[in-house]
Amino acid sequence: MEKTQPSSFLMVCLGNICRSPLAEGILQEKARAAGLDWKVDSAGTTSYHIGEAPHHLSQKVARINGVDISQQRARRFNADDFQRFDKIYAMAGDVLDQIRRIAGRQYDPAKVELFLNELNPGRNEDVPDPWYGPEPGYHDVYKLIDAAADKIIEKYSSNV
Ligand code: 4NP
Image (cartoon, rainbow, N blue to C red):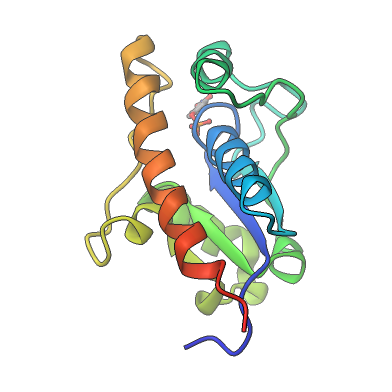
């Protein structure tokens, strides 16, 4: 049991253009709607897409669902993120390995969780990477992330 409820959340994937921008936008919107004063951000473990807006299909599925992620810009995950965030969610197992490697001595296992373990505890499932596929994959990813984000709101919105 954590002593205080987390209020800052970092969503991490590889490129920070497909999955984690959706996770950031969806959780931010749900937190806002629930009246929670949360900080939500996202980052990628690779540097290929730094400074880019989210993938156009991530933007599209978000927009269809009433979430605007168009202003986000990709940045790289860094070790100091462990000082800046209470919870760090990895979208997949390979991302978790990279987070551990990049963070080095700042790695804190108590802060890190596989994102889908909030939806299906203990199953260690990955959010599939829609990057190489067509639009339906982005809709599937949206639904998964949306369901897990509901669980996060449920779990951490009870203050006192
Ligand atoms: P993301 O998808 O990690 O969900 O943003 C990817 C985007 C780009 C690449 C890999 C995954 N890439 O290798 O460029």
